[in-house]
Each structure stands twice: as C-alpha cells, then as structure tokens.
Image: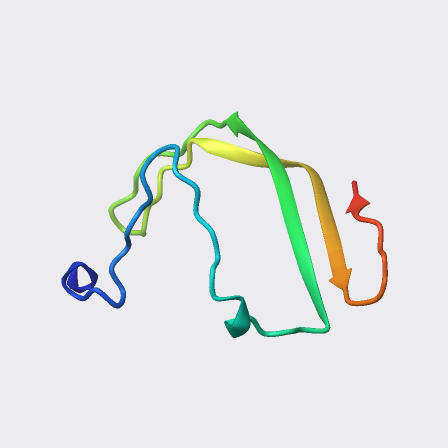
Length: 85
C-alpha cells in the first residue's frame, strides 16, 4: 500500500510490445559464478479436506508432481554444460 506513494520503490511496467534494456553497464558487478535453476511440476487436481474451525485451514485444490529440473552454472573462463533431468 505504501509503495505506491514513493517513486523510488514504485513498480512501473513497460508498455506491451516495448523492449527493456539495461543501459548502465558500468554499474554491473563481476561475480565468479552464477547458478540458474528451473524446476517444473505438473499441477494435478486433488481431493480437498473439509474445514475445521478448531485448526487453521487452507483449501488444497492441486498437487504439484515434479516432472523435471535443469540448472546451469555460469563461470568465467569455463564452458560448462547445463544439467537437465
């Protein structure tokens, strides 16, 4: 709620179809390596339980069944292959 009032933290979205570019390349920081990872799941419908006023309740309507993952380690000076399962 408060973030909408301050320009320094306000979220500003680009127009549909526009291109967003990083222009201040002198402000980049070099790091020795970075790991990029992605985890995929299949969302399957599930039977939900009934609410209970004595306990906290969250209605579960999907079960996420893992289907695969991939990670890539980016390292300066080395060419590494992504790991895909």
